[in-house]
Image 1 (spheres, helix red, strand yellow):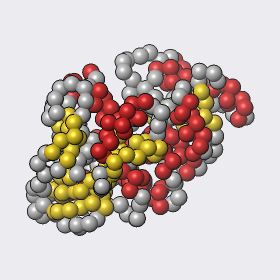
Image 2 (tube, helix red, strand yellow):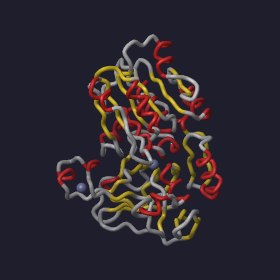
Image 3 (cartoon, helix red, strand yellow):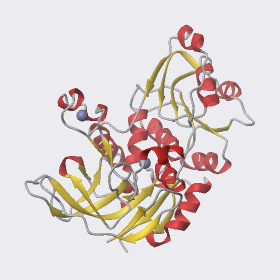
Image 4 (cartoon, helix red, strand yellow):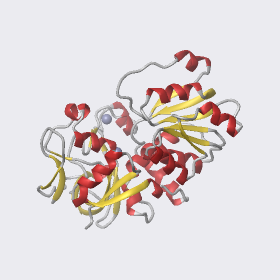
Length: 342
Ligand SMILES: [Zn+2]
Ligand SMILES: [Zn+2]
C-alpha cells in the first residue's frame, strides 16, 4: 500500500510503498478514505524539537481519519465489513486504575497512532476494535475525517455549563472555531473569539461568532462594553498556547468564571495568580476526548444540526500531500483534508 512515512530523522515526509498491515486477534483492517492534517503532523514533518524527542522513524504518520472496515481479526464482532468508522487515536493500556474504572481518557500509558505507532496517512490501517467509532448516522466523509480535533473542541466546550453564558475563546484555529460553534449550538449568549490572523478571524466571522477580535488592535474590555457586558466572561477556552492570551483571559473573566485550557505553550510562563484567587476562578486542563462520551456527543451534535463543514477550507488527493502541507504550514487555511479514496 501507499503511505506517508517519516522515513528518517530530519525534515520531510516520503510517499512510500509499504507492506499492507494484517489484523491480529481483536483488531480490524480499515481502508482509509479521508484524513485531516493536524498541527502534530506539521511538527513531525518539519522535525521540531518535540518531534526529535518523540518520533522514532520509520513511522507512518497521521491520526485524524475516517475509513471503511475491510477485514475483521479473530474474535471481532462489534463492526462489520463496509461499515464507516472513525477511531480514537489513543490506544490505552487497559490495566491502570483509570482504565479499570472506565476513565480511559485518563490512562497515563496511552500510545498514539501516527506518533508512537503507525498511523492513518496510508491506504490501510489496523486498529484495535475497541478504538473504533461506528458513525451513528450517514455523515459527510470530510466532516467525519476531522472528528479527532472536533472531539478536542467538544471535550473542551462541554467541561462547563454553557447555557445563557458569555463565552470567550482565545485562538481561532480550527479547534477554536469548532469550540465556538459548539458553544453557540449549546445555548451560549455571546461567543467572542480572539486571534491575530486576518484569515482565521474572517473564517470565524463567516461561521457566525458574536465577535471575532483582533487583539493587536482591539481590547476585550472594549468589546465587553460594546456588547453591554458588565461583569466579564463566564466561561472561557484557551486554544492558542499564547501566554498573553491566558493573562488577558484571566483579566476579562467574571467572578466565579470557569476556564478550560487546551492550548499548549512552548515554555512555562507566569500569570497573575492573585486575580485567579480573588475572582475564585476555576482553571482546568483538557486533553484528547472522553472515550467514547465525546464521540457520542459529536455524532449527536451533527445530527441535531451543528455544521462544522465551513472549518474545512482545503482538500487534496493524497498524491498532492506536499502542496497540502504547504497550505497547512502557511496558516492561511482552516482544516486541510487529504483524500485517500482515489
Ligand atoms: Zn490532531
Ligand atoms: Zn491505562
